[in-house]
Length: 452
Image (cartoon, rainbow, N blue to C red):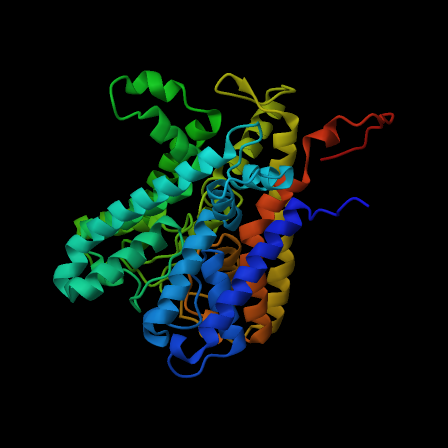
C-alpha cells in the first residue's frame, strides 16, 4: 500500500500549531513569567509571537522573565522566517532530497510558482535575514547601549531588530517606541527594518542578486520581476500617502504637543507600522476615528507576499484594481509592465480578498456581540475599536487601542484564531488553488447570469 502523504496546507498548519503549543508550554513554566499566567494568556502571547502579530495581553518586558522574553523572541524569528523555510534549510544541511510536497510549501511561502533551486534560495534568505537584523541591531545599539549599558543595551538592540524585521511589534518597553519619538536613529532604523521585512523574501533576493546599488541602477531595475516592481513602487506610494494623511488627521490631536520635525518623523513611522509591524509612538486609543479608519485600510492591505508581514498583500489589491481597470477599458486580459498576468493568479487574488472580507465580517459580529463592555475614550466607540482590533489581528499587525487585555475569553480566543488565520490563510489559499484546475479534461457548456 502506498504511504499517505500529508498535504502541504495541512503540513503548514500542523507545524505552526506544534510551534505555538510548544512555546505556550514553555511560557507557562515558572521561570518564564512573573506572577500568574493563565493558559489562555500564554497561548495568546505565543500565537501572537509565532504569527508575528504583536497583540499582547501581558506586558512583554514586565510580565515575562528574560527566559520568557527569549522564548517569545525565538518564536518571532521562527514565525517570521516561516517554519518550513527553516526546515528546508536543515534538509539541505543533512544532504536529503526534498520531497515534492515540501517544494510546494516553500514555493507558497516565497510566492514563487516556477521551478528553481529552493534549497539555495532558502539559504540565501536566511543569510540575508541575519545580515539585515545584525545591521539593525548595531544601529539600535548606538542609542540603547549608552542609555542602558552594554548588557541590557545589546539585548534590547537585538530584540527590537528581530521584532522589527519580522514585523512582530513586540517590545521590551511598556510604551513600545513612544519614548524615542525624537530619536531619528531609533525610529528610522525600526521603520526601514520593517519595510525591508515587508517587501517579501523574493524581492529581497532579487535586490541582493542584482546588486542595484552599483553602477547601472536604471538598467538593473528594469530586470526586476513584476512583483518586485509592484512592491517597491506601491509600498513607497502607501508610505507617502499614509504619512501625509496621518499628519493631517492628527496635527491638532495626538501630534499637537510635538514640534514640526517630530510630527513628520512620527507620521512617517505611523504610516509604516500598520503594514504590518505593530509598533507605535502615539497612543492609538487617543487618535481620531478617521485615523483608525486609515489604519484599518493599511492593515488590511498589509505588505508583500512571502514576507514577514500579513494582510491580503499589496500585490493582491493591485491586481484587483487592475482587473477593474481592464474591465472598464473592455480588455479581457490584465497586463502590467508589458507582462500578461495568468488567470490563476487573478483567481487567487479574488479568493484571498473574498476570504478576508467574509472572515472579518463574521468575526466582527461575534466579537461585537460578546464584547461590548470595554473601556473607550471620549472620541471613539466600542464598535470601531473592536473592528480595529480584529483587522489588526487578521493583518498580523499588532496595533491596539488598548482593549485587548479587557476582552473576555470568547474575544481572546477569536482574536487568537484570527491571528492564526490571517498569518496562514492567504498562503493556504495559494496552495489549494492549483494550476491544473484550469486545465480540466471535462468542459461544460456556458450559461450567462445577470450581475450588477
